View 1 (spheres, helix red, strand yellow):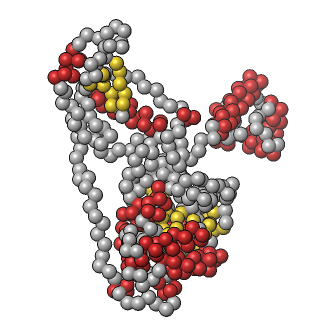
View 2 (cartoon, one colour):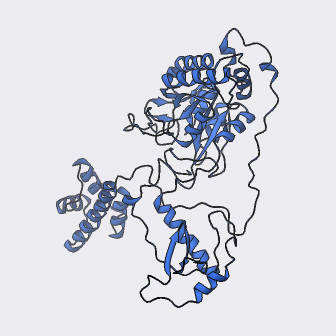
Length: 459
């Protein structure tokens, strides 16, 4: 594969950027479908452009351009899945910092007056109701989750041909979940304000048994055999997934492999993106709420265009495991709803750190960071929780172990220990020394990195 940027860089280095030569040579390579540049191509291009190139410079160009192409081929051979994380650590809590960690109960408004009356004869009159109103109607059994789900599925089918906001309807899954929700509520088990409410997921969130297309040609039939963490959490809250909603191809804009997603209030406009489907479907009253994602404006922009209320949480507040990675250090998942309180209710369910899903590479990088802190400070800190000095007290037994002579054989003396990211030494009698010394560790290769799930933790 030839890369145009590096191709032009090489030609510029030869002093040929201001001539016809680069354009002619590039056109030849593209017309012939060439994977590498040949001496004959250079000769032909030089003749047409009327430039003289010495033979040694021709050979330099060949070596440079074709060597770069080999590099790209090797990268493509890696076939790294979306689940492979870079060695990225995001931890805003520094050693010694203290802040409030208590997770307080969610506060919700009083039951809305609309929920105090009987359900309307035409259920579509509730299509634009808030999550709070719908949740109260379902909780008090004035409207069943099944009836609400069927109503929203009907609207999705009715308006999708014009708005193009749905990739896949999860009808079978949704009806089963709605029936389960009704049975649980009838038995007095209400899981919360989202129980029984139909919602839509941006189609970069993995859903087991349902295709996850990322909105891009070539991925139309992609199946990921795992649910994204956000999907799991909303399932646990009793919410009912009714549709995988559109996104611009690979999370860019509102153009996907099925067309352009439209703004329901102005059909001449696209819905903006990349959370195109969630914003359009929510604004059109085709779901109770939806989950989108944002790297740089992909929740706020379509929400503004379609007249929704979107919430872009702080980076790391909502786990991204199971989501397509666009930018590991910037991707965020958040709700798109019709009211501010709806966003708070949806985010309150989806938020929180997912533990135990760091990749092997990220774990190793974190250990290097923690080892460095302990080596430089001369004391053990619990860097993972950000609490300094918790283990800094050393027992008299540990001090004696530090001063004891080491065995030359190393078996009965002191041995290195790396456990749970903590570095210290174990004396022959089993006591632990908390004085820290340098220790060598090895970073796993990408091929060895089997810890991570789909997507990131952040994601």
